[in-house]
Image 1 (cartoon, rainbow, N blue to C red):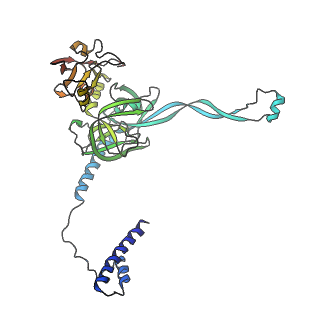
Image 2: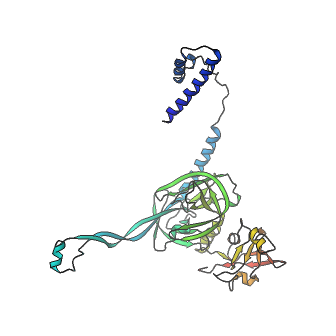
Image 3: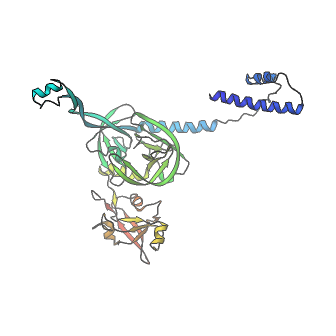
Length: 418
């Protein structure tokens, strides 16, 4: 249908052009439609229209594309052996149709009215069976079987997890650690000499640079590759899922590389085949709007697990509200950015016996710098604290009334359940 429309447009244009020359010349060319037909058949010499001389200049239009494609291919080849699929299985009830007689309790004389021995059926449980209920992605971070993925992929403590490596091998996986503050988790499989993916530097990302996503798309298409660009940095999103409820994730990377259900936990790569992010969420109803946790936010978790066997996260012990210019204006604050320490229905502003309490922080203090980095909407306090390790000492710049204080704080391990 499109070809017919295109031909009709060409014919209409040619007739219009010829008709114009006819009117201006004051005479009629008897073979005009023969000329048009010959032109459409590819015989311009018969129409009186001369072909332009072929160009002698050769322009290598596709060479840059070949270089770019080769870089993508090389990056995928480099990273793919380390990318794994994660299969989620659970013991679910086996439901069958069982015989059922709804009139069994009636006297025989009444049962005959409904047909003696009439049989019906109703659903009933016939034991349980281990069944696949979902899938995700991950990547190998150590030769001896550590795998990084999203926390929401392995959030169900009652589920069984199986890791399928790129070479087709299958391993039973144990959830070694879940990060209480970030959507990250580490699995352990009993394997050795695994190919380890290389981690990049997410702090150096630029808008528009190439991003490559690899993962178990839709839980069935293993090692699916999609390519796009970094389309946003330092985003704050609220993500939700059936098993995790709703949670706010700060400082994430936005990309238009296609990310689908099942890609969660897989790597987002640069053109060197290095991990720059961990794919974690997609925008519902959008066209290729996906988000990834910057890999630098995962490096502390990785090191913590390798060193201690668990994810130990740093803890300051304050409740706060991020200051916006509108908030600063309406509440007549002395600064237009930072974290205002303030209690809520969830608890006091300063947790008892916390590092914040020991350092002398108080309710209504404003933290506006952490180790020289400005605390603002692009650098929330929680994200800045997460850059450090348990027992690290950081320096906070604090506004208290009309005074500016510099307070050293020794971070501690986040208490369980916080």
